[in-house]
Length: 274
Image (tube, rainbow, N blue to C red; front, side, top):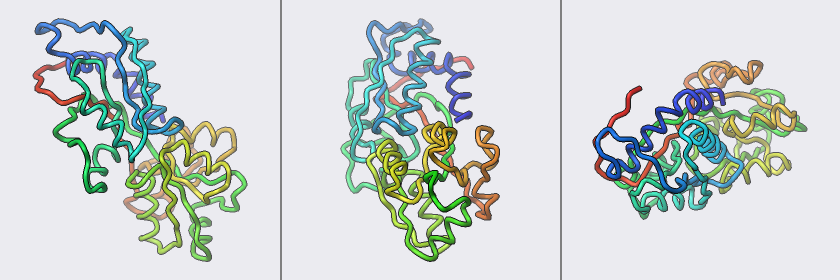
């Protein structure tokens, strides 16, 4: 959460410059600033309520504050985020469409799905890294498990179901690594995004969920969820009492979600001062 906010807040001016140059460089003469004449659409390829949606809205708000642009978040979920990314990849490179990509939809999906209607490498061009996101393993506030060790002990006695925001997401990969490493009886229940997964987590339909911290933190603070471990290398400042997976005995369990802006690919030779 803090990493995302720090990147989005402190680099908003540079990101605004990069977006203006990369999205519509052909519209401006060399060295001239591009001023959009209508709203820019930032595609959020996942359902509302998850980390990608939250970061999209945070970014749109900061670009509005810093660059004075009107940035509209368009939610286009489905097919593991592929619908939103395909829409972005096939949009006109006119400076008015960008997509918030992240680790699973830009990196993992091309190996997870047999066929994509776009090439994430050739059809999308990276503009800027927005930030890095930590994940957190949470259980319902009424759960009998108060530590990662207790959760895994429970999973040795009976099968426990865990939610993910979709196949191939960071939360899914972390949980599967945990299952393989420990031999715990864990059943994967994939959802169509972080929002639906969180709804069932709160409703008690699943035993745990490895969520983005940015979406889980308010619910943890409100004591609706209990945090058992974070995926960062060190404890997150927003949850100083919650141990890392590494502290909990899982060496090498350090995972982050990278969030970045991508646009319809085209040739561009521009630069921005840092």
